[in-house]
Length: 154
Image (tube, rainbow, N blue to C red):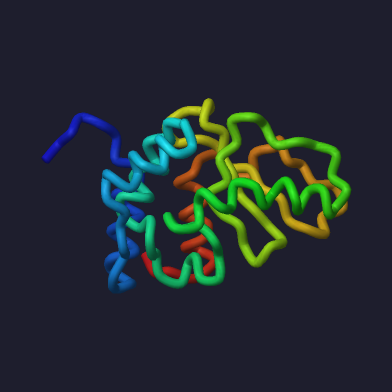
C-alpha cells in the first residue's frame, strides 16, 4: 500500500533480507512510546529503521547498543564519555543518540535536521573530535556504510 511518504530504506531492507534471515521490527506502538517517553518526533528515515529492524539487524550492529531496548538508556552515556575524555564540546540539545558501540563511540543525529538527517559521531582516542561536523550526509548513508563495512552483498 502506497502511503504517499518516502521510503528511505526500501533498497537497504531488500538487500538485508536477501542476505540475512530475521530482521526484527519494532511495532508502531513501540515507536510511538519511544517518542512519547523522550518527548520527540523521530525523523522518518529512522522511524522506518525501527519499524523494519529496530530489534535486530543481523551482524551489521553486533556488539552495539542501538536497538529499541537500548535507546532510552543510551541517551545519557555520551555525556559521560565526553567528560571522561575531557571534551569541552556539548551535544546539541536536539541530539538523539541512536548507537553506542562498546563504550568508546557513539552516533547521533539532530531531530531538527529533516526526515533523513546527517549523522554525527564521536570515537574515543581521536586527536581532534568534531562533534558538530556531519560524518555522513544522511542516516541512510550511515546504514549503507555499515553494510559495506560488513560486506553485505548487493
